[in-house]
Length: 240
Image (cartoon, rainbow, N blue to C red; front, side):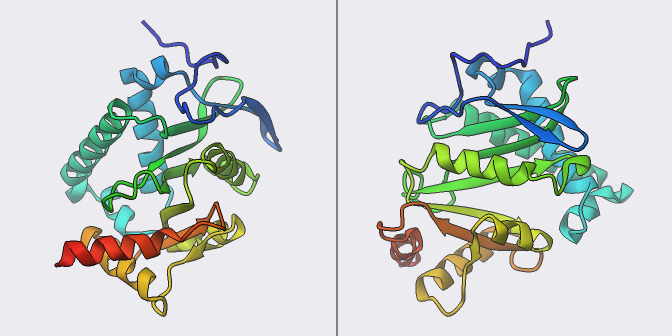
C-alpha cells in the first residue's frame, strides 16, 4: 500500500517544537514545506526515498572528488555498501529518536521531494547529544538552488531546537562554504585550542576531512558556554 506523504498537522516527528507547515514560492513553482508524520518517517518507503534523495544530490550533483568517485563503474560495489550503511544509520536514528530528530521536507505540487534537512543531537562526540544540534544532511534539487530554499530549511530546523541546544555543528563541503557563511556559520579555527582539539578528533574519524569538507558551527544561545570548550575537555579524557 502506498504511504500518503501529505502533511498531517496533528502529529510531527520532532517532539521538542514542531515546525508549522508553510508554502515556499520559487520561480519554478510553489513548494509545500512540512515535517512528515511519525508514521510516514518510520515507513520503509520514506526511508528509501530520503536516502535516495540525499545520495543523488551528494554523488551525482557535486564537484567533491570524495563523492565523484562513486560515479565510476569500478566503484559501484563500494557505492552500494556505503549507501546501505547510510540507510542503516538513518533507520537507527529513527528508531532511537529522543525527540530531537527533525526531518523537514519540501515537496512540489506532484508530491516530489525537492528539498530536505535532517538534524539530531551530535552523537559523534560523547555527551554532546543534548548540547549540540547536528545538521546531518541538507540538500535541494538543482532547479531550486539559489532560491532560498536551503536557507529557509536550515533556519526553520534550527529555530525548532533553539531552546534545547546551545550550538549548531555540521560537516559541509568546502565548495558550499559561501552558503554556510550566509546562514551564520563559521569554520572551526586552528588558533583556538578547543576548536583545534575538535578538528584533530574529527580528522581521526572521517576520510574526507580536511581535504574535501570543513567543520562549521554557530551559537544558538550566545549566553551559554560554547560546545567546543566542553567537547575539548571530554576529548582530553578520551585521549588519556
